[in-house]
Image (spheres, rainbow, N blue to C red):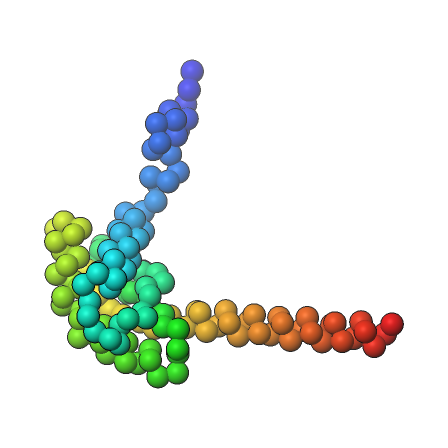
Length: 139
Protein backbone atom coordinates (compact mmCIF):
# COMPACT_ATOMS: atom_id res chain seq x y z
CA UNK A 1 0.00 0.00 0.00
CA UNK A 2 1.28 3.46 -0.89
CA UNK A 3 1.79 6.20 1.63
CA UNK A 4 -0.11 9.49 1.17
CA UNK A 5 3.10 11.25 0.08
CA UNK A 6 3.77 8.67 -2.63
CA UNK A 7 0.20 8.99 -3.86
CA UNK A 8 0.46 12.77 -4.06
CA UNK A 9 3.78 12.54 -5.91
CA UNK A 10 2.36 10.05 -8.40
CA UNK A 11 -0.39 12.48 -9.44
CA UNK A 12 1.94 15.47 -9.69
CA UNK A 13 1.14 17.10 -6.37
CA UNK A 14 4.42 16.35 -4.66
CA UNK A 15 7.29 18.61 -3.66
CA UNK A 16 6.71 21.23 -6.36
CA UNK A 17 3.23 22.05 -5.07
CA UNK A 18 4.57 22.32 -1.53
CA UNK A 19 6.12 25.69 -2.45
CA UNK A 20 4.77 28.61 -0.52
CA UNK A 21 2.06 30.52 -2.29
CA UNK A 22 4.10 33.72 -2.10
CA UNK A 23 6.92 32.04 -4.09
CA UNK A 24 4.52 30.88 -6.81
CA UNK A 25 2.84 34.29 -7.03
CA UNK A 26 6.24 36.04 -7.11
CA UNK A 27 7.26 33.95 -10.11
CA UNK A 28 3.96 34.74 -11.83
CA UNK A 29 4.51 38.47 -11.18
CA UNK A 30 8.04 38.31 -12.62
CA UNK A 31 6.82 36.52 -15.75
CA UNK A 32 3.87 38.85 -16.24
CA UNK A 33 5.94 42.03 -15.78
CA UNK A 34 8.61 40.71 -18.16
CA UNK A 35 5.98 40.11 -20.84
CA UNK A 36 4.50 43.53 -20.17
CA UNK A 37 7.90 45.16 -20.74
CA UNK A 38 8.30 43.32 -24.01
CA UNK A 39 4.84 44.00 -25.39
CA UNK A 40 3.30 47.19 -24.00
CA UNK A 41 5.83 49.53 -22.38
CA UNK A 42 7.11 52.17 -24.78
CA UNK A 43 9.52 54.11 -22.54
CA UNK A 44 13.02 54.01 -24.14
CA UNK A 45 14.62 53.97 -20.68
CA UNK A 46 13.03 50.57 -20.05
CA UNK A 47 14.10 48.90 -23.30
CA UNK A 48 17.01 46.96 -21.80
CA UNK A 49 15.53 46.37 -18.33
CA UNK A 50 15.15 42.77 -17.17
CA UNK A 51 13.49 41.56 -13.99
CA UNK A 52 15.80 39.15 -12.20
CA UNK A 53 13.66 38.13 -9.22
CA UNK A 54 10.68 39.11 -7.11
CA UNK A 55 10.42 38.87 -3.33
CA UNK A 56 6.86 38.84 -2.08
CA UNK A 57 5.73 39.19 1.51
CA UNK A 58 3.90 36.18 2.95
CA UNK A 59 0.61 38.11 3.03
CA UNK A 60 1.10 39.07 -0.66
CA UNK A 61 0.72 42.79 0.07
CA UNK A 62 4.25 43.94 -0.80
CA UNK A 63 6.44 42.98 -3.77
CA UNK A 64 10.09 43.92 -4.09
CA UNK A 65 10.98 43.59 -7.76
CA UNK A 66 14.68 43.37 -8.59
CA UNK A 67 15.77 44.54 -12.01
CA UNK A 68 19.00 44.67 -14.01
CA UNK A 69 20.30 46.80 -16.87
CA UNK A 70 23.31 45.95 -19.07
CA UNK A 71 25.04 49.35 -18.85
CA UNK A 72 25.18 49.95 -15.12
CA UNK A 73 26.85 53.33 -14.71
CA UNK A 74 23.94 55.76 -15.06
CA UNK A 75 21.20 53.77 -16.72
CA UNK A 76 19.98 51.96 -13.63
CA UNK A 77 19.02 55.29 -12.03
CA UNK A 78 17.09 56.32 -15.18
CA UNK A 79 15.47 52.89 -15.36
CA UNK A 80 14.43 53.03 -11.71
CA UNK A 81 12.81 56.45 -12.23
CA UNK A 82 10.98 55.16 -15.31
CA UNK A 83 9.78 52.07 -13.40
CA UNK A 84 8.49 54.31 -10.60
CA UNK A 85 6.51 56.32 -13.16
CA UNK A 86 5.08 53.13 -14.69
CA UNK A 87 4.27 51.52 -11.33
CA UNK A 88 0.54 52.27 -11.45
CA UNK A 89 0.19 50.97 -15.00
CA UNK A 90 2.08 47.78 -14.09
CA UNK A 91 0.06 47.22 -10.94
CA UNK A 92 -3.26 47.61 -12.74
CA UNK A 93 -2.06 45.20 -15.43
CA UNK A 94 -1.11 42.66 -12.74
CA UNK A 95 -4.53 43.05 -11.12
CA UNK A 96 -6.24 42.13 -14.40
CA UNK A 97 -3.79 39.40 -15.41
CA UNK A 98 -3.41 37.56 -12.10
CA UNK A 99 -7.00 37.96 -10.91
CA UNK A 100 -6.01 38.31 -7.26
CA UNK A 101 -8.19 39.79 -4.55
CA UNK A 102 -5.49 42.34 -3.67
CA UNK A 103 -2.62 43.35 -5.91
CA UNK A 104 0.66 43.83 -4.05
CA UNK A 105 2.30 47.22 -3.72
CA UNK A 106 5.26 47.30 -6.12
CA UNK A 107 8.73 48.49 -5.17
CA UNK A 108 11.52 48.41 -7.74
CA UNK A 109 15.11 47.79 -6.60
CA UNK A 110 18.26 47.64 -8.72
CA UNK A 111 19.79 44.16 -8.37
CA UNK A 112 23.43 44.63 -7.39
CA UNK A 113 23.93 40.87 -7.25
CA UNK A 114 24.80 40.88 -10.96
CA UNK A 115 27.62 43.36 -10.35
CA UNK A 116 28.94 41.28 -7.46
CA UNK A 117 28.97 38.12 -9.58
CA UNK A 118 30.92 39.96 -12.30
CA UNK A 119 33.44 41.19 -9.71
CA UNK A 120 33.88 37.66 -8.35
CA UNK A 121 34.40 36.25 -11.85
CA UNK A 122 37.04 38.91 -12.50
CA UNK A 123 38.82 38.02 -9.24
CA UNK A 124 38.76 34.32 -10.11
CA UNK A 125 40.16 35.10 -13.55
CA UNK A 126 42.99 37.15 -12.00
CA UNK A 127 43.80 34.30 -9.61
CA UNK A 128 43.81 31.80 -12.49
CA UNK A 129 46.11 34.10 -14.50
CA UNK A 130 48.51 34.44 -11.55
CA UNK A 131 48.60 30.68 -11.01
CA UNK A 132 49.24 30.19 -14.71
CA UNK A 133 52.19 32.60 -14.64
CA UNK A 134 53.58 30.98 -11.44
CA UNK A 135 53.49 27.54 -13.11
CA UNK A 136 55.37 28.89 -16.14
CA UNK A 137 58.09 30.47 -13.93
CA UNK A 138 58.64 27.29 -11.89
CA UNK A 139 59.16 25.10 -14.97
